[in-house]
Image (cartoon, rainbow, N blue to C red; front, side, top):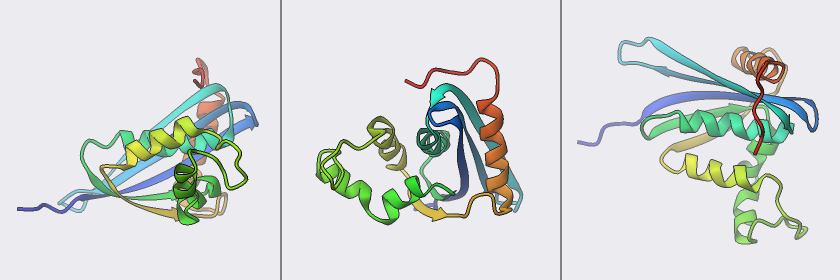
Length: 159
């Protein structure tokens, strides 16, 4: 019997103090169990020197990689960089052009785009753009996680 995939809501945000500069990401995963109870997991980390776009992508990657089974995932992000890559089909063009933009320049953050595509593969993914800093509860929480991670101690190297 084919069991329906678990529906997971994912909210993500990245932050950077200076661009490049110290950065961090925040991700919240939510799902409702069979008893109609919500479960949440928060993920975040900070980096010594990175960019905002890298942190936006890392938030999504880490969230997807945390899932232990194939899921239906609705990813809500305020990052046009991330959402437009899929909504405007940039990602398809980049791959067809051997990771070059329409202007024939190398795509930035190829390492993360490739990692993201691998992380997405087992899941049914829907991508939703939400306006940042507009009072959206989970976007605001992700922003706080990202900013806090960026200003924390023992920041990682962004390799």
